[in-house]
Length: 338
Image (cartoon, rainbow, N blue to C red; front, side, top):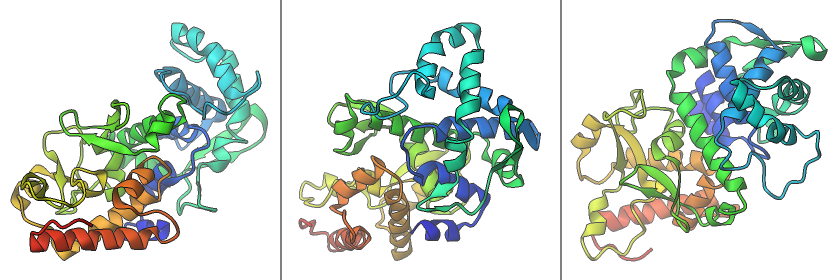
């Protein structure tokens, strides 16, 4: 399914989304690195000193609110661990408006052998495009920014930044001792705020739009044209299977307000669709979109597993059957239980 996601739109942008949205997350390091890479690429340079990238990387972490951890709370770390250095240097860095020399030095030492080696990894292989190459030895090393990275940065117009931040917030929350367990109960969409929330504690995490945009390639679900700015009024969150079924009083099917049934669409496309049931092609595309979400680490994947009763080695088959059942229910109008 990872390969199918790329084959459906084989671009550097898709490979970037795979790295950010679908890669494993032992810590959050790939997110500040990704943000720093985008910023560097937008300066127009094709190479930067490692120390410059490390400074931008550290700045991303310094600017984080600190409400959630950057690694699982169960992980132990020594005094020289980069996150331990970050904790010691954060206050001084914020007061100075830039990372301290000690923090930058720790980043220069740690990121080449850590996150920079793993950024491109995806399920035992690398994504189809590389976004940088590290050259030389020691602290004077150079980071070559590839044409793929520069193309991604030029095209994104802030959308990829929003997607990265949303994924970062979700992963941070999953590491938190206070709500990490609750997240395993899945996330809910709060329509009034447009936020994904931890259902058990009503803790708002991040925007639904930014969380799911990448899984539909940043395109309107219906017309397939780019969505653009995710915060604009021209984008609607739409229920592929119309929410009206849940207002009939006799609906016995699943919650149609779940992530599995929510997509992003242009306002005009959404209004044109209105309350009709999805076409067979739209159902196939929704299945493919959900398959892509299922390739992302928890908690989005766990949210689908719970809502669709689809886990284990045959999870994809179960998701497909779930969709078939919902389609049959909305076609007959009976709303019988799944």
